[in-house]
Image (cartoon, rainbow, N blue to C red; front, side):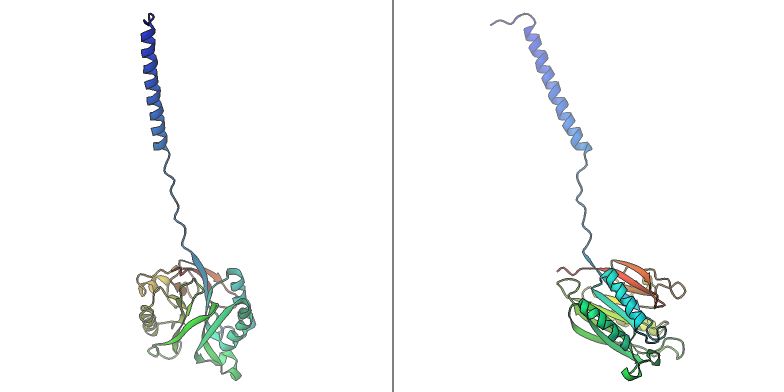
Length: 274
């Protein structure tokens, strides 16, 4: 058939229009894809577990009294549900009283005597004074490491026996984690020697946790544990020093405690997942 006049031109116009429409559609899709950012998948925060460390002021402040120390420790447990608790400056009679309230909650404890102090007011029990660790569930591989002391002058230099108390626990995850506590002297040279000893002892372990009254600021403590994380709780007691902390912590918060001259440090630590 022959084309009617103008028919061929109309077909050309239609074809041209189709090409233009297709081009515009392609351009629209391209612009849309360019303008819409790719959905970034957020990195989930690392799984953590709560731990607590507290200098209880058990002898010099509480004179061995059990009620105020037990009440404050129990309040911390109820509020934060820690899987590990470290207590310093604790009289043995206070530890026994704490056991009575924490054992029914699933905590297992260990204690080491550093010295004997009349301020514990526990003559029948030997006035034992030292450190305690509590773990949620059983622990293994308990060890006590004596730390150097005696270089400080006698008197007000906090001169006396010191130790690092450690256990292995699965409370933080399926893989055992070495957790320790200590309480360093208030001044050098004993304090510096004790910190160096703790760093040397713990260097052989994989990612140990050290919950302690370091009697030193967190920035100073960090220098002794290169490659380890340690959050700053900013405990502002004793003239503004940051005394207490957890080597291996992701976060740390200081909480005033009515029975102590120190704050409790509530920290989070990475869960041992492998």
